[in-house]
Length: 438
Image (cartoon, rainbow, N blue to C red):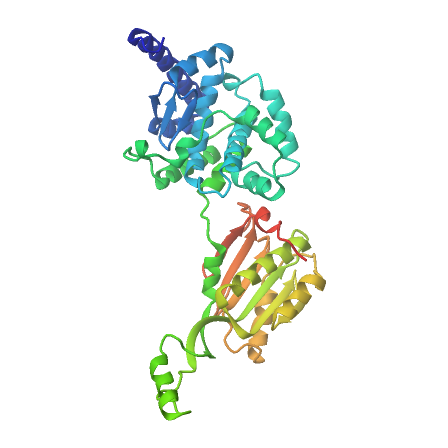
């Protein structure tokens, strides 16, 4: 039937009308999507048996679309909204995950949860009740259903074959093969990541500012926030705490072994050149890890964060042989100060250290205490403070003479802004909560 040009023309004409109706329906109900919809193109591809997208083009098998519409009238709006949300959240640009299958499932669940939360009758499907039941179960495992959090949950705790089949049946709408790209698509003009971020930020602004009815928009806002949030590599941030130090060590880069061995063989024990003993290396020597032990910061999470930070600092020989790290616990006052000079000291803290405090939060006592330690000569050249906190505390007014990183557990628009002289880093709870502590 598809070989007949008249039939193809008729099929595509009907598909055009359905897609235009879907776009209009979405725009009327959710006007904040208008800019994104205007940027997306559709292209028909017979034989693919479904729908896919590559970043700005939705590829549709029009025969599949008409056949599916006969069984599920809401499917066309659902398809368009599903793919639109993938693109706005830039799921297609994060297809470098270690496990593509789990990322596909996580991304599908994230966008379908939003559509279900919207309670959009024009996009309803017969499977929605069963899908909602699965969403309820997932919310017992993950605090919010974003693709990143779902992916981490699946990677850490696994996904059974039965669960995988159920998720695909209930949440899969489109194929994600085109996310990977292909030679066929390589010459197409793509909407850039910056463009999608601008679109997502506009949606976020309009949602927060102009949307009269935000009921059912909570998950959409959460996912948009995650999409536009600046993400930093924590390991790279820690490089600010790497300083140049000098160790007694053979400098292989500048030492010439030819002259050295020739002298030994010709003149006995007299080398022609002595090895250069000093080599300048970037090493971590002195830092403070400050822990906010207020009631909202949990003990296991604290130790996981400290373990993660310590492991990163140890990588690639970044430590001096002798180190001076202070782990300071503080809520509204200093609760403890544990000095770490070697691996044994650190392991003792992880295995037996007690998290103390759980009162109100005030950041200032840590800075006053560190200044006092400096005056007493405890630090020769303190590089900086890494402060792990929920962010609900009183910041110092004065800028210290060392670097400061405030590391927060999850994003939170309600907390006070960080002072201009400090760096802000967000670490998801799921990112450090699964650390294995022996």
